[in-house]
Amino acid sequence: MELSKNFTLAELCKSQTATRHNINNIPTDQMIINNLIAVSNNILQPIRDNYGIPFSPNSGYRSSELNEKIGGSKTSQHCKGQAVDVEVPTISNLDLANWCSVHLNFDQIILEFYKEEEPSSGWVHISFNLESNRRKYLAFDGKQYKEMK
Image 1 (cartoon, rainbow, N blue to C red):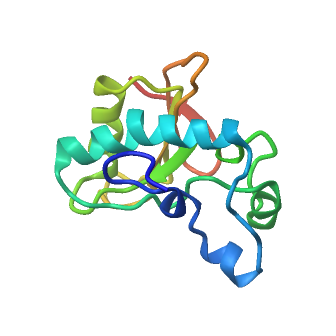
Image 2 (cartoon, rainbow, N blue to C red; image 1 turned 90 degrees about the vertical axis):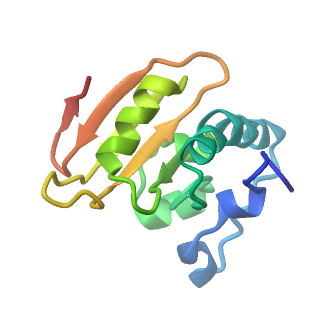
Image 3 (cartoon, one colour; image 1 turned 60 degrees about the vertical axis):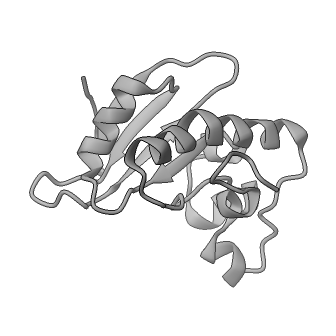
C-alpha cells in the first residue's frame, strides 16, 4: 500500500526484530494507517523531495509487542504510527534535524545519540500529530534531553 509518492506501508512497518521474533508488525487499525499516511506526506516525502536522496526510515510503526521487545517507551508515538526515525545518506543528522525544524510542521524532533565529531552518528526521530503539533525540538545523548533551537 502506497502512503505517499515514495513510501509504502511495508517500508514503515519493516523490522528485523519483528521478523526474528515472528511478530506481526502490520497495523489493522485505520487510525494508525491514517497517521502513517500523514507522517509519510508531511515528514518523509518533504525530506525526500528536498534532498533528492532515496532513504528508508530506520524505524516507523511499532506494534505494542514489538515496542516492548525492543524496550521502547510505553508512550512511544511509534505505536500510534505518528513517528519515524530517519537518516539520509551523506547528510549530517544535525543538518537534517535543523532543516526539518525550519521547513516542516512537526510534533517533535529528537536528535538522538548525535556526536558533533561524527556527523553520521545517531538518528533523527520526527513525529507528526494530525490533531496538533507542539514543535518541540530536542537532543538526547542517552542520559538527558536538551532543548534545541
